[in-house]
Structure formats: C-alpha cells, structure tokens
Image 1 (spheres, helix red, strand yellow):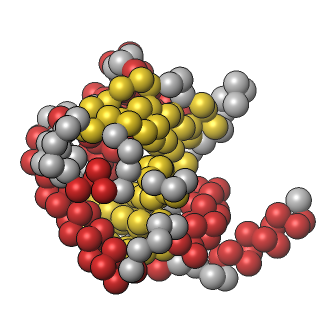
Image 2 (cartoon, one colour; image 1 turned 120 degrees about the vertical axis):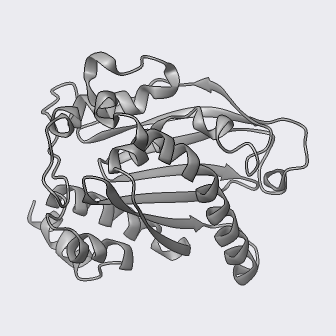
Length: 253
C-alpha cells in the first residue's frame, strides 16, 4: 500500500494539463479516487499523446455522458465523419468497482471514407467508463497499432460542462500532419454532436438516470452501468458547481 501511495504522489507531481483544470475550474473537484484513476491512465498513455482540445458547452454534463455511452450514436449521429460505419456484435459489459468496459464490432461499408486508410473494414472497438468523468475509446488500426481517445468531463454548473478530448496513438506517421488531421476530425465530430446534445438538453435529462427508466438495449449497457453506480446522486437537485459523485458499493465487482 505504501508503494502505491508513493506512486500516486509521483503522478500527482506530474499533473497533466487536462487534469489541472479539474482542480482549478471546479467548485467541488471530483472525488480523489477518480482523479487518481484518470491520472494513472493518462500517464500510461503520455508518450503517445498527439493532441488536446477543450470546449465549454452550455449543456448538462449528463447529456454528454449519455451521448458518449450510447453506442448507437456512432452510426446515427456521425453519418458524415464516420460514413458507412455500422455497429455489429456487442459483447457483455465487464464491470469494475467504479465503471466498466464493453467491446463491440464496427464495420465500414464500402464507401469513400478516410477511416479505411487507417483500419480494417471490420474491427473490435472497446469503450471504457474509467470514472463518472472519464471515458476512453480504444480503436485498433493497421499493423497492431491503436488510437486511444480519452474524454474527460468537468461539470461547471447544472447546465454547463467542460469537455476535454485527448488523442493518443502509436501509429507511425509524420506527427505534424497526423495532428492536423486529428484536430480537424475532432472538431468535425463535435460539430456533428452539437445538434444532438442540444436536443438531449431540451428534454428532461434526469429521467435517464432513473434505473427503472434505463434502456436494456445492448447498445446502452455501459450507460446502464453508469446509472447503477451514480444515478441516485444525479436524480437529486444539484447546487451550482461541480457534481460530486460517489459509487454505490457493488460486491459483484
């Protein structure tokens, strides 16, 4: 235990730019365990870091969570940037004490799509809920390499949050060119997401975090896991500022 504490202290001393905002911008910084988990994962990926982006969105934090954990949105919302992508076989969720992960198949239908340059037509993607504020998407590409996209969300108020996007990869490609491509692709996907996020925000986001109302579709397994762990906190009216979430003990994990 002492060795683990020393390791975490070492990581804190090397706080990455994205994580500093959690401590500077939030009225109530997220639970320390979540910060440690996120910091450890981002430290593991640090040598492969390519780009960072940050956006302040006048949209409830729960809308972003719902959007990112809804697998179906990849084929219904991103019809331009992910043209021809279809969700295939979806595995069973692998729960963790504060989150979970799920693997699913994505297939690119024959079409003019820049993604075909980087990846096979059919691959298995993994989506991970590291903490209630951190989500990672792991995408395998050619030659046993990978792209990792880490989304960090910082609730600022009841109806606003800050979204951080960090992209990592061990792909062999000229870095400046790859960074330009990824910046453009990230901006495009966010632009596609905005109408959907605004539509979600105009409804009643709190209804999604009621366990009895959560969809049982395979594409929503990871969001259902989020609701099981944190839904009771989000159902309550929140004060202005960050939302402090604590997991419900789950002996199955």
